[in-house]
Length: 197
Image 1 (cartoon, rainbow, N blue to C red):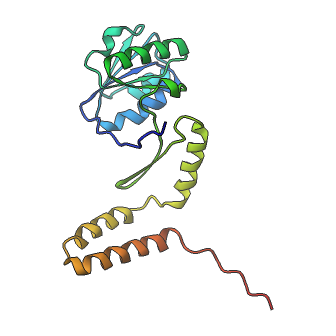
Image 2: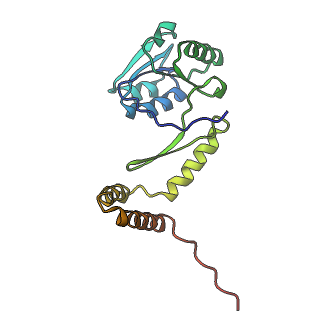
C-alpha cells in the first residue's frame, strides 16, 4: 500500500489525543499550531505534558479512555505506552470512520505524522510510511542545513505573486528566472577540482 502525502486543515476540527507521556507531548506540540479543538485523555499526564498544554486551548481529561471520547472527533492520536489500548482505540476509530494515528503501530494507522520542516510559507514533509521514523528525522535535519530559514523565502512567494500579473509570454520566463536564482542561492554548485597538469 502506498500512502497519499496530504496536508490537512485541522482548524476548529475536533482532535483527540490519548496519552500523557513524552510521545503524546511530541504529538501535542505538532497539533497545537493547527488551530484544532484539542482534547487529551490519559490516566496520568506527565509534568512536561501539562506544561506544554498550559495556557493553550487543550482540554485535559485525567481518566482512562472511554468510547464516548470519540463522539464528534475527526482525528484521534493514540499515544499510550500500551499497544493493546492503542489497538483497541484504532479498531473503534475504524468502525466509526474516524482517522487514527496509533503511534508506533503503522498497521493500525489511517494517518501518519511526517517529519516536518517549516521555512517561511513552506512546509516540507518526509515519511518512511512508518517503516523507520528515525530516517525521516535524519533527512529532515539534513534539509534544515540545506534550506535557509530566511525572510527571502517569503520574498520569493511575493515575487511569484507579482510575476503572475505579467503577460503570459513574459510570466514563464520571469518565473523560471526566479526559480533559477533561488536554486543558485540555496544550492551553489560544488567547487570545481583543479585540472591535472
